[in-house]
Length: 247
Image (cartoon, rainbow, N blue to C red; front, side, top):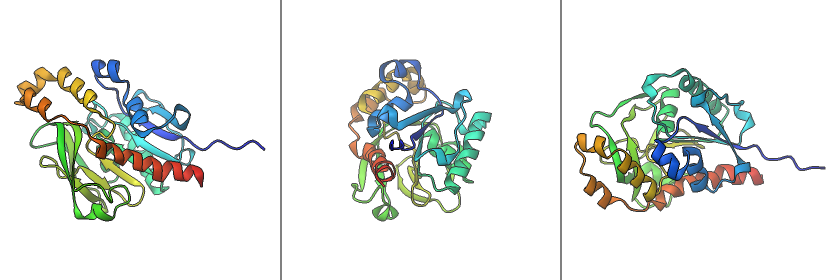
């Protein structure tokens, strides 16, 4: 009897990086697969921003929602369809990891509120502080109390959905890691970004960042590797993908 293939991980692609970033480092989906150690045959990339349709949540063993240059507050039809799918997937207890736009979309889908951050953009390698609930959470237990992560965002989760638990913050953003029960977690930062990706973003947005009052030399000086941030993505895959596959 032929062994049935395990269901794939849904990579819900909500946009593409700027051309200079994509040209050097690939799409958000490719960055995520590289950082998470996912093989091509383990993932199904669904470009929802192009109108591609997700299959029912039961078709996947987990889902990862990517970042995007779009804004959740635009309420684009494709984004609202993805939000409805997320609500169904959470009801069906599918493990989900949301990243940046995915972090905000998850909060929006579950009843929270997203808007532009009142203090403006957060960008560069920033310090993430774990909060007390993180000590016993499956994906954050054992991580250092402070660790660096790569960020670039203007919008944020301004109001949490009911039942959400904040696991980490930064000095700029109060909702850096949010957990929605076992198996559903999101990060405002990008665990899939390395210093080379962050450097390409800074170069691409250099003029805009200067206009917003950022010192590029300072941002570049603070750039450093972010293995603990990447570890969250790796832990998600190990706990909710590899274990499920083996079960």
